Length: 314
Image 1 (cartoon, rainbow, N blue to C red):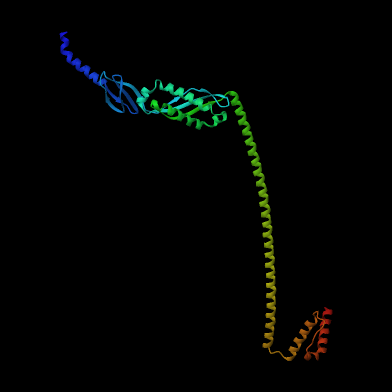
Image 2 (cartoon, rainbow, N blue to C red; image 1 turned 135 degrees about the horizontal axis):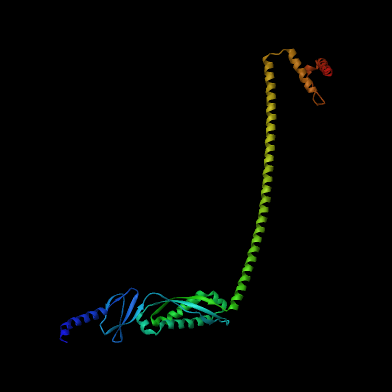
């Protein structure tokens, strides 16, 4: 016993060190510790280094503040039109008050599951089958509201509730598949009829456009022909006018040359005879002969007979 006495202080110091170290706690991120002192709630520790009194304080519950997910098994529910189906739900929740979570309810996960099942039955009982299948978002919103209100005293915040699967009876599924098949066939027929209608409209429109284009082409062709005829008539008129001008210019040039050459009386008389021959060759029924040429009528007759005889000999 005496050899132990010198080591007693060391043993006491070692025990105190171990006791102090064991009562130093580190609260990790996204966690909270609920601490009791002598069996009563003392405080809630958040993130950081903490120290509790040995043998007096106790960490009663370690709580995770992360968002958690619970996937509940399918629950049988009955719709308003007496159709029994299986629905499984997924609940996303988060602990908002560690103290209420620690002391609010025993087995909180089981409590949430039972609350979800009863709330789901109440909501689906007010809906018919078709409404249940097409109103998932409405059901999710109602479920979240009911669960969040009920779990608030437990320190639990319900973030989302999702209907994972809705499984109606097999005969209902067969009827739904037949209905969907009939609906697809009906839509196919409608689409085919609309396609044929559009095709007929397009063909009719194409024919209309073709007729319009042909009429425009004929109109353009007629305009071009008329313009060509007009241009030809203008060219022809311009040619005739130019020919007349050239004839008149030639006659004027001949008269000018005749004047320049100072013709004798005999030459002028001969030119008068030539003019009379041209006048006599016309279709006029009456010919007026100037008085100064009447005396020369005999000579003109003789000259005309001479020309006639020469034409016969040819």
